[in-house]
Length: 281
Ligand SMILES: [Zn+2]
Image (cartoon, rainbow, N blue to C red; front, side, top):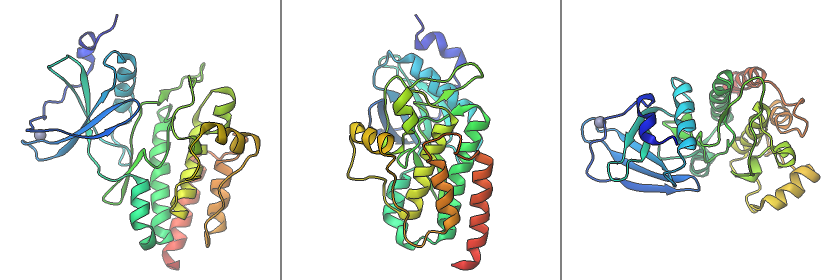
């Protein structure tokens, strides 16, 4: 059986972990997240471990993907891994950013101009495009998995991400994540691919333009099945949104994946919108 120690030579070990205390900042379904301020470099970093130390496959897969997607300004920085001496389990060490897109919009929305919204939308799309060029699907894109660091977008959480090759499509073993962002196609046949990420992006583009989370009163997957899959129900455009932007996100969240645009076209459109809105603030 594969253990953490048999993998150790494949890990990039990070040794800049000199701290007095760590603070738990999140305890989600897949693991626990802590932060610490490193005494030697004064940088605040995140330690992420999986809830169950035996989930080594998941840990390895996430670390592998983090390594592949490094070097893009809109993807979180991954420093490496370290070992917990008390039990031999490993932690991922990542850049710490204190605000996610959902909270950022809640606090700053009234001060944002369309040029700001289009810039953020374009950065999210740039990060996602980078993943797709590496043949990686994110699999869980939503406004809690996108952080805002000094106004710059950083995509995080590759726990459900998969590298796709030519012959197979990854399966969602079960529906996880936030239902409002999940491709209805994924509810139907339990498969996701790049076009599923583009559906999620469409929902996020709507959220950036309106400042509200999608379907915020509804959380049950059963209701989403009914609304999005059976009745093709979608959110309503926010007032004063440019028509070209509405058309873009509606195409992204179309029930038919073949209608959803390619990432290159999405970025081109967002870039045009951003440039044209500079003079219309
Ligand atoms: Zn340090």
